[in-house]
Image 1 (cartoon, helix red, strand yellow):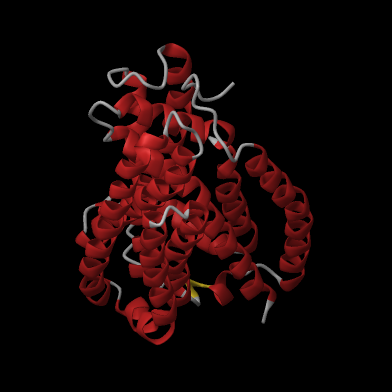
Image 2 (tube, rainbow, N blue to C red):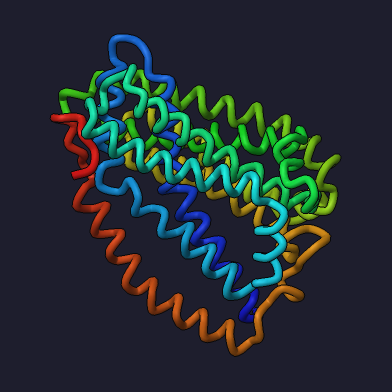
Length: 335
């Protein structure tokens, strides 16, 4: 295995962490957008309490992946940055607005206010970002990038369905995660049945969109589709098993195990895409070999990453352990 391949594996690990952690945060915002009925206020308080300790910390994984891409594969970074500015800008705007609105909502009227306009901005931004990142992933798989038409990845069917798929997957993940948070306190235990129904709905929607994606993958990204058939079936099977196991475990109220199974379901999708994408970083435009920095640079980068992870990973684990049972008493988020 070359240093470039090892760096790609590390980057996929960073993307997996971002999908499982920040992805659940975005999915919680999706459910905030659709919170209705007599339990809507309690749902929003639960979401705000769950996000409070980690509402921006999870973005460290996206920053890590971007820095690794820039430092290790600068050619690919340049192609992506110069041709996918529309979906990437939408993702960035969504991240910024989501964080800002989350804070302003908490201090400007409470997380439970369904008509507070900062709450609507928070929920809408939480939906925009995973959609834009899904569109970006689709563009990397098709290689259909045009500097003169940077909006094109956002207008074709494959990109749009990938964006919707990313939103539904994060919503499924968030519903599963929130079930455990709701079950930990008597004041929120009544939310568990509704969250379980939302997890089921997210799983069914994700499965339906995956079925729609398969023919689009073969028509719009045949190179990746052939590799998917050769390499990624085990990951797809693991994803399906994880999703079904998560729903079964939720039904049996084994919420911690359900989180692990749901994480496997989402990670399997990401790993399957990564395996089918390799060795292309941008299909038809840039490969791991052509875009890689000199070997000495990559080795130095990997050493720096290892040292950084020695600090970041224990810190993140401690953060999640300290705040594993969110306090929903006041419904406020940060601070």
